[in-house]
Length: 341
Image (cartoon, rainbow, N blue to C red; front, side, top):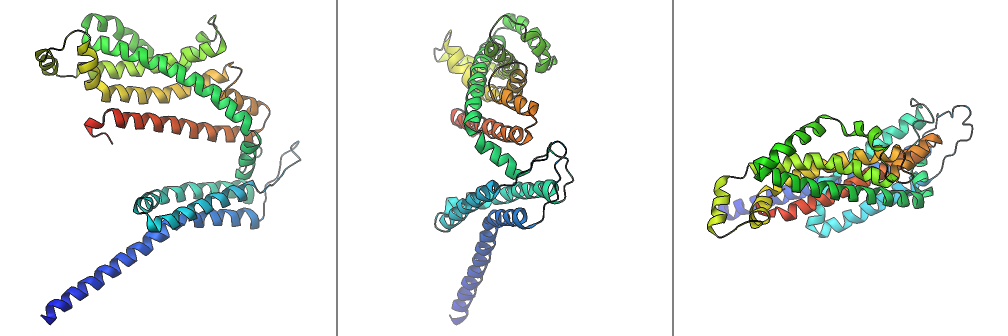
């Protein structure tokens, strides 16, 4: 009996030590982003700068925007670490994302060192992080307005191209006669990069924004049509036979059988189309649209304000990431029956 109790006690102590060591290691991992933020602030404030502004750029300013932003980020992460002690789901997500956050923060610190501290990247083409953040805050209103224009054009063109692509893909997938006419056009447009059509579309007798939407719609239509057509064609004939047995006819075959069964392929096409649409948007805006984030980037490049240009690129990336995240969330919800990740 004593040996049995002794074994239980030893096992309990061993498990407690293991859990304790794991929790300590997990806590250190979760705190690493905070440590790197503090390290970035120290490097920025106390390591001497060697950057030399090129002629005629004789005015060079160093602010504390980086310090404020990094301090706010560190404070938020610290609050999340405190919450993580009591909330398991926050602890798990924070611990999972911490290594990636550390990598991004370290890359920012290395970039700032290369620009400011050892000055191996030429000015003014590689602005330091503080100047980029200051430019984002300075032009926040114009950036938000420009992003609003861009999102309006993107969503309109994406919606038109996606809808036409689904219609064409479903029709071509179900009907060989329609496929005979659709497939050659799909192959032709898929073989030519979307940027090639910019010099053609720019002379269309329509407005600036309509031209941009036309280019985006064309860019989206091609992958959505291809994926949808292939998805519908891959549906087993037994599926349609079973639907007919249960009395499904006519249009019911499309919206009750074909579209639901091909929905994973349709969303793959929509995801692929979003990437091409984002590229088409920026190209179109740089070719003459008098507003939008692409116009803003091109304008700042012309003014040699590279800090503002980099800031707009960062905001653009975050916006496109958010749009992609929304699309991915909708995809997971719609085809949750497939167990999509």
